[in-house]
Amino acid sequence: MTGQNDVFLLQRAEAERLGIEKDLLQTCLRGRQIRRYFLEETSEVVIYPYKAGKGKSKAIPAPELKRFPQVWKYLNSRRKDLAGRSYFEASSKVWYELWCQRDIQLLATPKIVVPELSASSRFALADSSQFYGDTVCGITLLAETQEGLLYILGVLNSKLIEFYYKQTTVPKANNFFIYKTMFLKKIPIRRIDFSNANERVHHNQVVQLVEQMLPARKQWSAVEDDYEKHRLDSFCADLDREIDHLVYELYDLTNDEIAIVEGSTRR
Image (cartoon, rainbow, N blue to C red; front, side):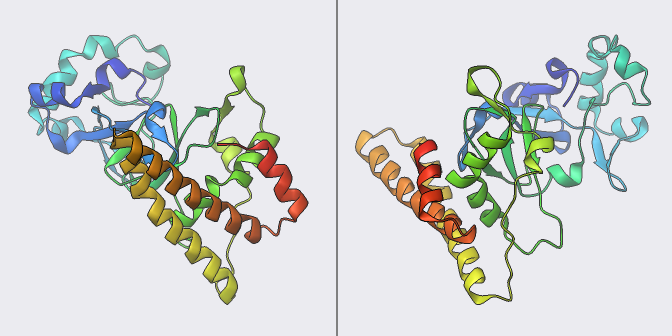
């Protein structure tokens, strides 16, 4: 994402010590912090000297950036570290820009995130304050999409979609799979006919189950008591089974097809 992580990525405590203005700091997720349905805590932030433009992020002009004196001071103190990037200097970018800043309008919105390299499906929800780095791929919905983000999240984390993904993409070393746009866009998400009452019910049931899953998975990640962790494990496993069952129905799988998916996809 940045082209120079040593400069643009900081621990939050270090950014605070330097007095870097919070308006230009965003939480930065890495792939290793993304789990199924929850995010591990991160203390890393990214300096993001951009503002929304027409269809893409635009670098804040230098005169305007100087209104953030600590950011300006810090970036200038690291200017030598930002030099020498031949691919960067051959571009039209300003010296203090990130190499791949992505679109702030896609970052600063609720979204689904997934690590770009994983042995299994690990889709989670990130809010508008959580940006992500170059080991993460993000999924946002078009404005006209009627399906809810939580419905899409449930479908993506289902056994069926994990089975499909592993059958249609090529594993890398140690059976890790690449979760990038070129592959993610081919996933056949089951669209909902909202004029059909039965389909609406299925959609809403998936959403309700995911709404229960999110706090349970977050709580599971935080507890240390073995009994409570086991209880939450069992609760989440039950929710997973219910979501998988609904997804099988939505995709009209036969019992034989379900048996194939269940036999090859284990959690």
